[in-house]
Image (cartoon, rainbow, N blue to C red):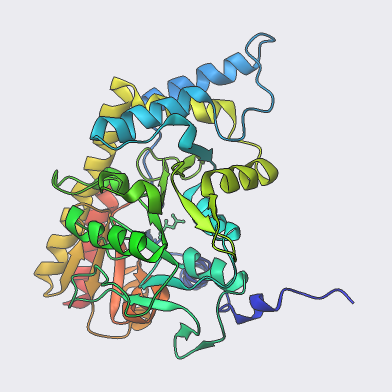
Length: 407
Ligand code: MLT
């Protein structure tokens, strides 16, 4: 008798963004004449930067020639992209990362979801609440949790991010092995200072723990005092893996390109306490299960680091940050308090009512889609997340509609 992985039965019915998409589809079916503005899932709306498109086209043309054709590439990514990443994203900021410590992939969602495979199922996991659901769900699937009850899975150490701690969680009281952190944060938009990250790095070093640092939104940082990478923190190379993505920084959500950094110093231990290289383990996993990102996509990603590419990506992000300002100003005007939006595309609004009720109200009365905070965890109850990823015109229209609906 073929048996399922029972752990899947512990999962909540469906993935958060699929639930929302179903609700929106039902609304649209019942209200075919109403247009809906989506400020829910963080999906970019602007075209790819011209420099990326040019490189993409040129690479496709190369593929049409015998001399320029590329078959299977290196699983870890082409040297030209790995080197550009190491130089521009890390060494230029004083963070020591070498090209061969970079693993190019098709998305930070896949990487943050897959990385847990190389760790023991007995690991004690610390996960922020609220959180990007992928970190939690993939650990449920792997059997690292007990049942779900009262909004939480047994066996997980939840790191509460609340107004009291400015949405930057404190160290846990109990010892943990694997710690998920994300800054600028999804969903709250909060940021962490170097001093705050140092506390986590020191904890990980003292406890032989490991930090999984999701920096998918680092390109939105405008406050120059804030770290873009965990490797800007002394000692982090021994205890942190970092995830990055071109999805939000260069509009690659549909194009798919991201990368993970696993420094050579990073180790984890076997049951006897012997240290093993995580770089070697992740490389083994990556080569076995992944066949690389296509050549044209990696050429398009490389173009992000050209002078035109940098300027065009900055302009894209500046546009979304300007949207975030408009959303923040509308929320203040309506008497709501919020965080985020200044170094992040997400605005985390305290609605002072049930998150899903607020979501329904905005959908039904204003035709605006947000994300209910409760979908990101128990501490998200009472909040909604508004995303700045849309056109200026739609963001302005959405805020006007919310003003009318709520006044
Ligand atoms: C979000 O809306 O939280 C993100 O777009 C989801 C993702 O990047 O997978």
